[in-house]
Length: 209
Image (cartoon, rainbow, N blue to C red; front, side, top):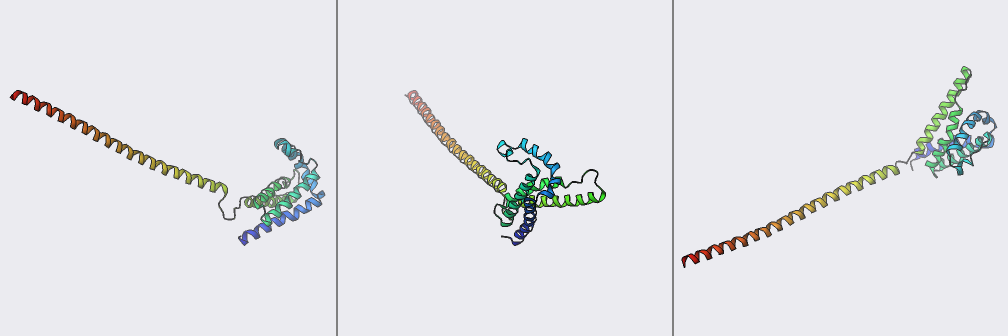
């Protein structure tokens, strides 16, 4: 395992574990900021998600904040330990979307409030980007899509090569068949020529007599 990659994943995961634990145990300070997002996101998720999933989407903002915190703790631990790291990073990416939306500057905010909100939003966007990169990290190994594509190319090349060999063999067989036919035709002409010569010889003999 690359130590730099492991250290980077651990440092990234530490933020989510600490903040997720705070949100799960003490959600009250985050409820006010999450309320506007929850009113918009929860109905949308309930409409788009399958019924088996939509039934478990919490409607209460406090419960939603806690659920997001738990998801960040679990995703952070998975990313740090490497157990289901890509899936865990994907979970962290999804958990950061509400934070990015909630950190947008509010209408009517002062200049200082807008500056602070933009700073928080940039941090959340950076964390979202880092989690997305981690979700695609294959640790230097080819991804499944890359390997599938290479396998498809190899099969295509093998099929093309086999096709060429079959075409070559078919031409050879065709050439052999034509050769046999030519030999057969030559023998036929030879027999016909001998027969004609014999007939002419018989005619000459009969005239001489």
